[in-house]
Image (cartoon, one colour):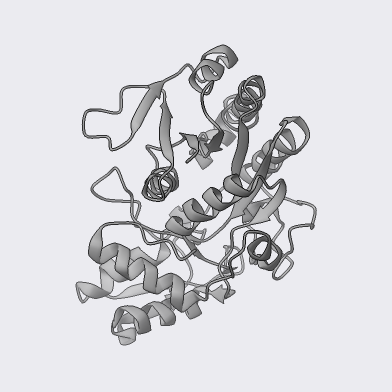
Amino acid sequence: MATIAVTGATGFVGGTVAAVLAGKGHNVVALVRRDAGPAFPWRTRRVDFDSVESLGDAMADCDAVAHLAIMNDFQGIYADRRAGWDGFVGLTRRIVDAANRSDTSVGYVSTDWVFDGTQHLVEESEPPNPVNLYGFLKAASEMVVLERAKAGFVARVGGVQGLHQTQASGPRAQDVGFGYFVLSLVDALKQGERFTVWEDPQINSVATPVVSAEIGALLGRAFDLGVGGVLHFAGGTPVTRRELAMATCEVFGLDRALIDFGPPPDSARLPAPVPFDTSMSGQMTMELLGTRPHSINEQLGALKQELETKRPTPLS
């Protein structure tokens, strides 16, 4: 099997990607800035992410690199735009240049927020049109991969749900995006607490959620097949927040009478526009990768199993 480097493996999605790739027999190497500790579940290599040479040395024997590391601070990228640019675009350029030295394929995980939120079930060929700095930095990083990498692809994801593989808790809080929504709802309702599902035209209100384990499985397929271009790792069902909440109650056996609906608190809003409808069509991608889009109930069923077993459950 392939040797695959993973950046961002200490994070939420990156950790699940590493776990799924390892579970499918790939040799996983986590590229980290600092010692991840003795309990970290995968082989690590400490690298200087500011150095193409250090990154290149770390990837010299790797067939592919799954690039998920970013400056994960929405407020911070506005407060220090130079740092934000380097934490997305600069880092991606260094990853690509390092990968090109050893003919390592690059799989860059991007976001549905590269779109402006005015379209429904956007296809892979649709040009980006971001409305905030996060979406812009992701779109710019996509261009680095598509135009600079010798081999590789961009994989857009959105509404990602799942468990953190290397931390005991989190992230589990509703925000103006779709990520983390399901488990924050499940946590509250299981304890008999009321939960307010946010509904507001100024937040991300429609998406095609996908479990984080599925991202790992689809990345593995894309690397194995040597595909290029833009891919959409999207769930098969576009849903509103209300629809996702109702489906979650059905799959997890929770009391929907505990759910309220209302706007988010002002403290949760971002200092920039948020795309309303970020649903993506992944039909072309799934056909290319030899699988199919999975419905919201299938995605939620996989998440329920992951919550029960503490192990990621890919569908593909």
